[in-house]
Length: 349
Image (tube, rainbow, N blue to C red; front, side):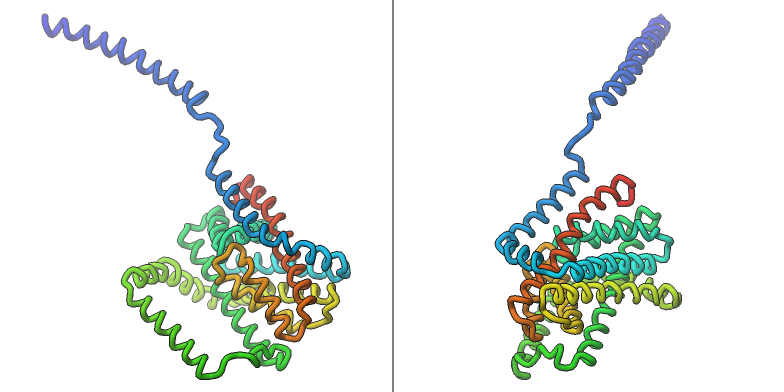
């Protein structure tokens, strides 16, 4: 009897407690779908966009004091050469897209690649040392099916190719430029340079003696450097991809040089193509190492110093520098925000 009494109780418990529980769960699911998961305004993507916009504003605010000079230089500039500078910048985006496609070895649509490169100017200007543009490149490649590790290696490979091309162009300019790129006439003496080099070597030696730094460098090599080298080996075995990657990287550097050269002519500074090329290469080097967002301050200082050291009057160098930065950085950054959102809507980042 006890068993018989317990059975209905159990059955009732299962039927009454379990049944409503399921119904309650269903109601709860409907309630959760209706009220438990409301549309959130503060999403992760929106937070990232806000942070990037604030970073861009932080970069742009210091230039407010220079706006009268920038506007005056652009107002007096020759429109035709401003157009040449703008076309050169556009050519740089196309060249970078070709280089990325060649390094990745996958059929990335050219239009998507160009849009990503423009969007990268927005993220790069809001973050130091191009961190944002590199991260955007990795995210972009993963949407085409590449694993994160492979996408990271591809971006690292593109950076490695760009570095090799950068060094080769600097050496070439030093060989063919002659006095046009003679910026070492005021350099310190040989003994001073030797002491500075020794101090740098000592600092590197002490840093490598710290286990945590050694472990961090080993981790970077294990997860990024080795993959990039392996992809470089594969790239070397594919002549067409190798040529496309190096030509794309060279096209990006030369497009910046053409843009600055055209801006020099536009503001009345004369035609100095080799000077412009050397200045942009030096500026790009400092931009990649500067801790400030978008290389702000470092790039402008490097460009003005390079141009004046190479014989351009200071006023003209300042006007050309800020005009060049406006055409090559600030206007594309505004367009980059638009393409950043467009790529997000299309699921490309």
